[in-house]
Image 1: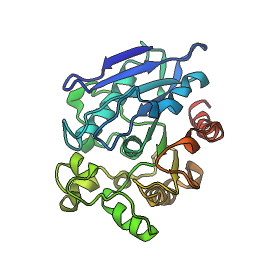
Image 2: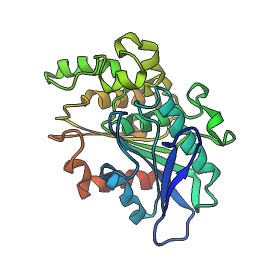
Image 3: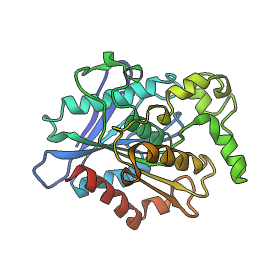
Image 4: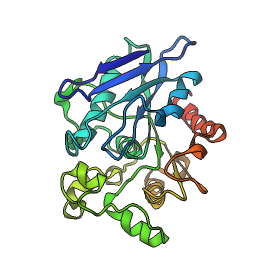
Length: 274
């Protein structure tokens, strides 16, 4: 295991950890873990990523990354960071005995948003900051696990209203989404669209595995339903798995349950180990 490796040098936040399986020869397929925390908080070592860290016991290298949060930088800097981290992983694959051609991303909440965006926007120039390093490498990924990520920031309040749920308000000047955008999202339609994963859906998107709790009070589950429907239309249902976990909230035991994790890792095995 290696901790606090710098994938760029602009911010102290631009660091990652690498965990390798205790057995096996490699090169190992990679799961890149992206923490949540409303773009405000969170860390690459948080317990929220424990289900992803389980990957080392299943033959995966797990790379957990930090990125600039809203208290330090505004959108799309956090996107630049996660893409720079993917490029760094590819550039250093041989050193760490990992397979640069088999990279999945997996994140909860804000990490789910960034995972989904990485999945749809591979090599989209306007979301890359190549000055962060390894410009010769691609930021494309081969699979995405999106756990209850926000997708279109501007539709969440209306979706809660549609569901009859008094959920967290997002169209406010002090919401997490307004904080990362740098101004109220209701005054930032273009900035919101820039980081909406749906903006970049194309036929060459990788497979997606999407899960959301039906009782999520922070991000309406319709965010995941709408994303899945948009992906279905372009890449086909065979490449998109979506599951609503009945009664689950914003994360929790139903997501981390061994039976559910078996489904997630079966998806990853299908696309990264064959």
